[in-house]
Image (cartoon, rainbow, N blue to C red; front, side, top):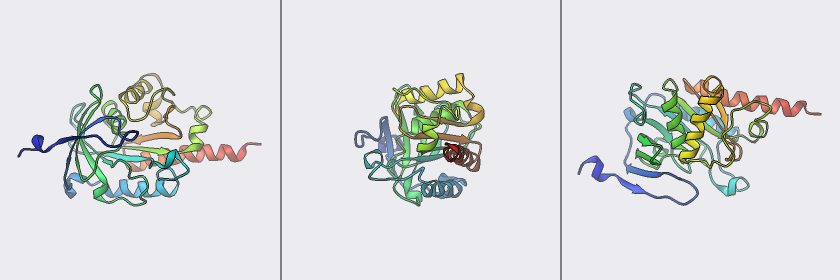
Length: 231
């Protein structure tokens, strides 16, 4: 049986994944995980401890939040085929992730609301957003989506580019909003934006894990510093 015939369309619980997921469940090899896997996992663990990634019965109706991804070779692939490793859907509640908690997105079509992937679990519900960033900025190697109340609440003062409040997470509309921010704001230079319709949602990206993670932590620190200085 070939790869295409093995692949099946999976529809997980409503309210988590919004896209049509064509996913082949299988173990990913070390080569498929890529050399960035360990660094990506380390930064994710740090963000979990900071509360930007996690799961809390008192937040977001108890649904896990936050995800990370990294581009995989070949970096010369065209739009719609820029494969990336991404944390699995609803893995936010685990402090440390293993290779079994990641998926590899091999191709995608934002207009068709389609993500094609393989690996031990289904890819993050925000995979289309990650895909759009990689399509628009081929130099970007890592995307991190955290939930940070302080920067989100201070997004106007911090001048964070922000997606429209009526646009939901994980949808083609969100991906197209990201494209608008690339076109109409300084996002391509700053690498951080807020998701206006996704409470506390903040996304950072960069040319390395440390650049993307550093941008998210820096904006978190800036928001917290301002809170301390308030009369």
